[in-house]
Length: 239
Image 1 (cartoon, one colour):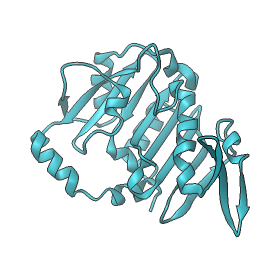
Image 2 (cartoon, helix red, strand yellow):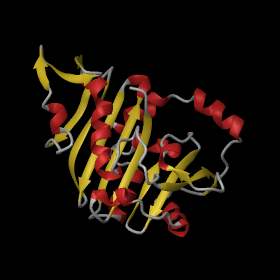
Image 3 (tube, one colour):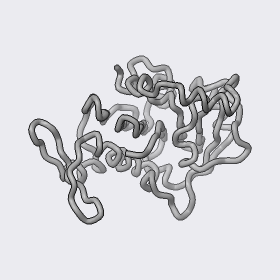
Image 4 (spheres, one colour):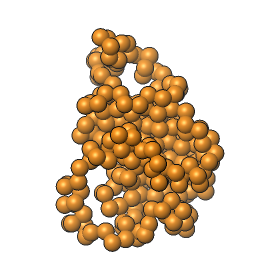
């Protein structure tokens, strides 16, 4: 696994809405910052940035794409999204009680993966785990995007092992090493393309914000290097 991501997709339309590449609305972004309690915050860049450039912002920043029928938030605080009583989780579910929602996390440092799926405001799937902890949450039925991957797996000595094609040959992987592929698969329904690829017609555009009172760029990098990602990661799992 080589990706880091902490993203939530929220739309009042079908999940495929974001694949239509809707236009970012700066005024709506400002309103969302207040509604979701993300601020105070200031723009970190004058220009809009593509989704992939904001996928894993520094600890004192967040990416926000606000569109007519939904929004995308990229923020390391989303590692805590599925923690019981999480304020951001509550704000989103309260503000969008009938929305289609997908929260994803990836962190290559510990082969962490997770996705939390809501259909019209109701949780239908929650899968999360890591190399050290195994599968921590496995709630709900397999989604259509998961089924082809799980179809290539079997239980060996009590552990699920996947046989996946790598450059024309089948190789075996445990759940933690397959988690990234599963996250890519469920996210594709929302994005319309794999996270590690780029669409021909361009990526979704969004704004990068810095939290008010954030450290300078150099200090921010130092703080990021000293932070412990595992504490936030475990909060995603409600631990």
